[in-house]
Length: 124
Image 1 (tube, helix red, strand yellow):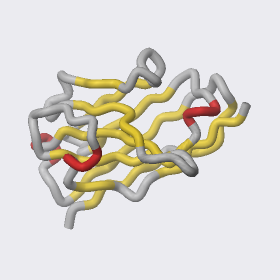
Image 2: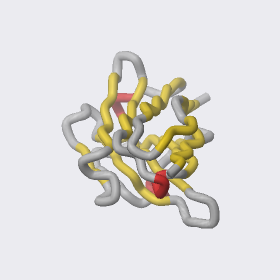
Image 3: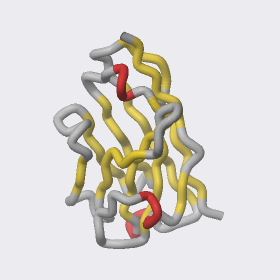
């Protein structure tokens, strides 16, 4: 059974930092690109960033470039999202998702497996 479990969310003041983790089980993580998406209340789920199978390729949404950094440790079956300089508009539930492809997809429908999400709240 494939599972993706996010952790590391919480409440932080604007300008602060959080590090999210996505722990994978039941799949060979290095066969999957892994993306992070987020969904704020009343809004559609949006793409944040994706990392390639080996970790050498990344694609960031413009809204997080220069502030967020994605990385992965395939040996540990974990993908990380370091979020710095957080803004209130970053408040959302953050999801990680796995995509069995070489392509760095930004559309959610490409992704095969999803985690349950972790809440990030940034206060002003």
